[in-house]
Length: 248
Image 1 (cartoon, rainbow, N blue to C red):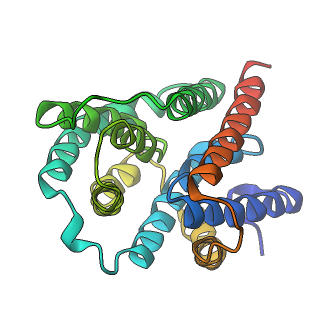
Image 2 (cartoon, rainbow, N blue to C red):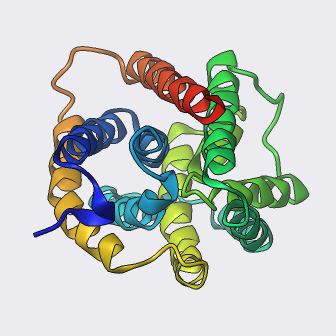
Image 3 (cartoon, rainbow, N blue to C red):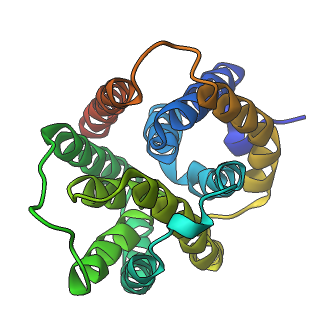
C-alpha cells in the first residue's frame, strides 16, 4: 500500500515524529500544532499537502479541549474575527495556490518567522481591543489560514491584550473550529483535498490524539509559559530551515 503524497518511508517516519511532537506541544502549551506540522512538512514535500490534514486534526483536538469552557467564550470577539476571516481567507488561498512551490514554501516560512518574533517580543496593548480591531485581526487570520496557520496571528493578538486567561483560551478554542468549518469547502475548491488527504488523516489522527493527550498530562515540571517559549524557538528553527530550502 502506497504512502500518501508519494512520501518515502523515511519522509513518512519523519512526519510521524513531527505530528506526535507537535500534538504534544499543543497539548502542553495550547498552540503550535498546525504551524509546526506545515512548516516541518515543507522540508520533505509540498507544505500545501498537509493543510487540510492539520485542519481536521485541529478540530479533533479542539473537541478534546472543549469541556467546561463554553461560559468563558467572548462570542462578540469571535464573531468579529470570523467576519474578518471570511474576507481574508479566499484571497489568501487564491494567492498561495497561484505561486510556484518554492515561493509558497518561502512565504510560509517567512510568515512563521515573523510571528515567532512577535510572540517572543511580548509586545502588549494598554487595553483590550474591540470592534474593528478584532475584524482586522480576523482578516489577517483568514489570510494566514490559507496554509492552515490562522491561529498564530490570533494567539499573538490575544496575548498582547490584558485578557483573562480563561477567556483567552476559551475564545481561541471556539474560534478555530468555526474557522475550519468555513475553510473546509474553500480548501476543496482550491484543490487541496484529495484521497491522499483522507488517507493521511486516517494515519495521522491516532498519533495526534495520543500526542495531545500526553502533552495535556504535563509530565514535565516546566511552566507552560516557559515551554511555550521553547516551542516558539523550535518553530522558528523549522521556519528558518524552510526559508533556506526555499532560497537554495
